[in-house]
Image 1 (tube, rainbow, N blue to C red):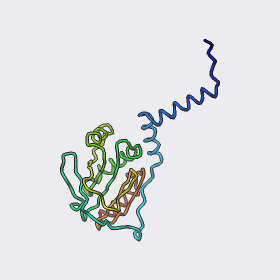
Image 2: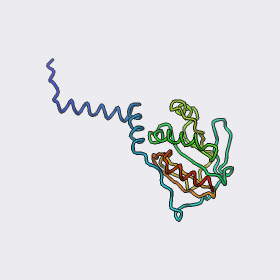
Image 3: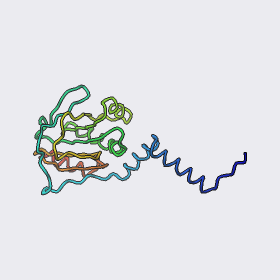
Image 4: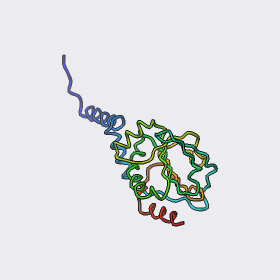
Length: 189
């Protein structure tokens, strides 16, 4: 058998395809995507007061890993931070360390709801792996219309009057000075 030596361009194409496959379909790829999302994460912006919408319903029900059902109604009058995420979503994983820092400092001043469609087993495995202590929930009923999104991560900040004052689709740096200042202002109300 007479083997030909592949052309340099053929070898480069093969290497390129292998690298793309690694980035798309391996844990290395997930790691790279998470790191890139962290690099491009900016502080979320507050919605202008004239464009803010009040939640149309507080009847949304969630359950925690123990099976306890909670309703958004129970948090009426409080500041509520709601994040929709999944274990398979690199942008979701990318922003979680900033949320963890925020949660560590504000958990006694406001409500945090981290809502996933994943099983609690998968969600808790990720929490352990990433050293996170965020409270994980699953939706029992549909969220209010003002928080419906077909994309994750989707994060909402609800003020004490029930207004959606932040609606961020995609990765953000939730531990930024400007976002903390906004929370501090709300807490003082």
